[in-house]
Image 1 (cartoon, rainbow, N blue to C red):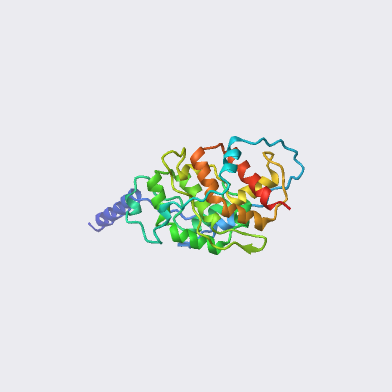
Image 2 (image 1 turned 60 degrees about the vertical axis):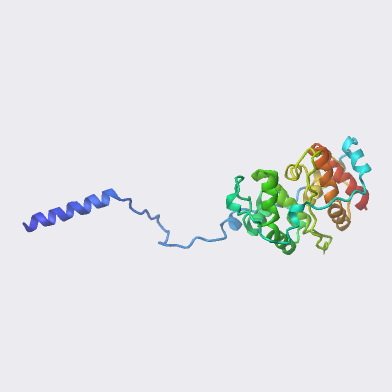
Amino acid sequence: MKKSILLFAAMALTLSACGSPQPVFRQGTPINAPVPNTVRANSVNEKSPGPLIENRNVSVPRSGFDAIAEQNQNTNLPADPAFQSNGEVSAQSPFDSPFGELPFETWRDLSDHIRYSNETTYEDRQFMNSRYAEGHFNKYINTAFRDVRNLYKATAEEMKRFILLDVLVNSLEAGGRTLPYQDIHNPPAERHYKLFPTQAAMLMPTFGEIVNYNRNSYDVNYVRWDEYRAARYYQANYSRIFGLVMEHGPSKRDAWRLVHREISSYASR
């Protein structure tokens, strides 16, 4: 009888072991080891500046978009009403949106995107004041950015670009000086415009991108800029050029060449 009981117990243990997955421990890995929170920072290298190519001798034709911009040189456009919520949280819960969550949930998400992503340039980080950028991002991540996404039915890629542009134009520093915080935004969409703001964002360059473009793109010729004057011009004319892109829907090349031409006229040295 005793032997039967022992045999039954042994069979039960065997069946239990076969019926449930067993933990696998890799050699050298301590049990319950904490997961480091610096994996990305240690495993991904930050970007470095691209080469400076000075003598390019490129023929840069003027486009119809250049002529339109000249005719609207002194145009002042209001900011999109989505940014006039004074920091109040949007009445609609972000979880109710049919368009999904925003591509960045925290400032760390956007900061990592700027520092490590191949969709941004070294100069985006170089000309960004981190304190201003973080404050601006936190001000609008639960308000205007969600409203913009819902209003224009923007895709995740469009919102990624839109948020990047809006944060960077409001956190510029150049020549060792930080530009005063202006709270600058895109103008609102109009019925006769060809593009929504979130679509136009895909064609607009950041200031860092236009600096990089000036340094080494064979689309344009290199012009030596006073970086602080260049940054001030970019910031002061951001809404105007953004509005022209929305209204007329130029090619990305024509939009970037326009920004480069206007900055070069103002800030060359």
